[in-house]
Length: 558
Ligand SMILES: Cc1cc2nc3c(=O)[nH]c(=O)nc-3n(C[C@H](O)[C@H](O)[C@H](O)COP(=O)(O)OP(=O)(O)OC[C@H]3O[C@@H](n4cnc5c(N)ncnc54)[C@H](O)[C@@H]3O)c2cc1C
Image (cartoon, rainbow, N blue to C red; front, side, top):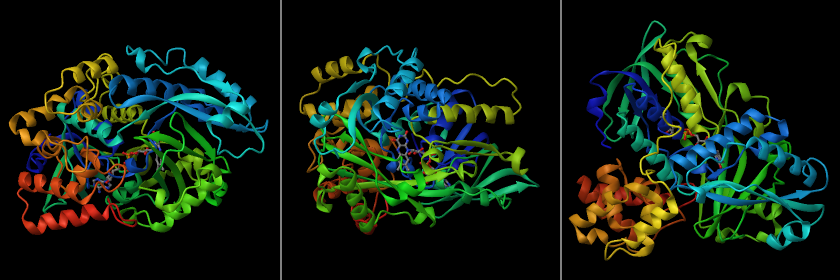
């Protein structure tokens, strides 16, 4: 995957995707696989925005049972099975404990009915070759058992609980890159650090996008027949660049953060009811906080608050973290978290589309939107796609590409291939067997930990990293301070994965920064390798290091 901006202005594409979050990347992959010529531009690094806030949970649609929305429930179940099939190295089953309170809406009886409906809806939801990845049915547990698993729970009105099963997207950054690489492999021309700053229109038809190379400040144009604005919280800003932004089209944003804390429960993820005032106001008191075991710690999220500023100014402040710690302790008294227990924080903005205004936040956050601006706003050649969930983005992309085909004049679009085709790195039959075999055959000098990480993060493409170790044995060493991340991964991320900045390597290509500051020695060692690969001078090296350090300071930007 090479960043070649000159190529982007050489031809007219069928489709230009604006936004390299997961929805844009999936759309580019689907469209390229179906034979369209596709370009994608992302103003920052791939999947650097809302993805950071994602709780990494793929549920089976149980939240939709309260509205008896069986269609959405089926979609969630199917898409979960699809994701587990096409990215077997990056998704793994996750048991989940949901305590119940009283005998009303949050009671055990209502949950029992919801689980029964969900089980009926799964009649074909588990058809995976890899039996090790089958998601078991849930079961109810007693109040006593619930207290044994989660002794820190609030006891009053506790009536029991349910053990449910979902999946965890263990490394969302790598999963998103797999989609980017899949798109590039299918023929899409993708580029990060390329920002759409304007459009050229012919009357009310969009003809070209003006794009700025964020790394150099140079501008160029990309021609396409259809433009897909898939910029999440920025979507109304990008729409405004047409100068024909419909006045009623607003995207309201809410800010969500999550924290990385010491493990609160090692075996189960669990849900606890938030008592936060925004939760009461925006989600009618129904919002759950999720605590999930993740890399030996707990990932706890998400806080919600309305966000009124510019999405480019988003950051997580010391105040946000401190407030969220109070919220977690109120919801789960046994946590007894202190601010200093929090090793890191993630966050992002959730867009609420025009259609969802007026609904409560919880319902609104489950809504995605595909909008053809020709029909509603008389702007030709432009669609907007707003994703609501990472786990259903493939389906959203499929529908968006169907619309693109119709706009290109095809009455019967070819069928999507993304339901069955493995993502880049996902070519294996049974993950556990595959991992065991690769571990047995690991080359001398590569530790078991490092090898296991390589298989989990790169799946069937792990050999690409080992090739760099063959080129230079020194790259087979781990980065100082890490027991798992090989120097070869840093080289690989620059040469094959379009890492342009030190933060791209530390935050999204390797695991170095996922739990917090990886240590000064690790940052410097990475900066040295990237500098040698990209020819940075000392001033750039210092600037990159300073920016990378800021990521781990509250208020810093990623
Ligand atoms: C707190 C929280 C928790 C969540 N938890 C879960 C979960 O557990 N499971 C789940 O499935 N989903 C979850 N989600 C939802 C999920 O994170 C989002 O649906 C998903 O990440 C949205 O991806 P996207 O590509 O639509 O948007 P984004 O990731 O926001 O991507 C839009 C991209 O467009 C780019 N862009 C903007 N302007 C321009 C421009 N002018 N030119 C070029 N590029 C531009 C941005 O840089 C950005 O990268 C959660 C969301 C939040 C907020």
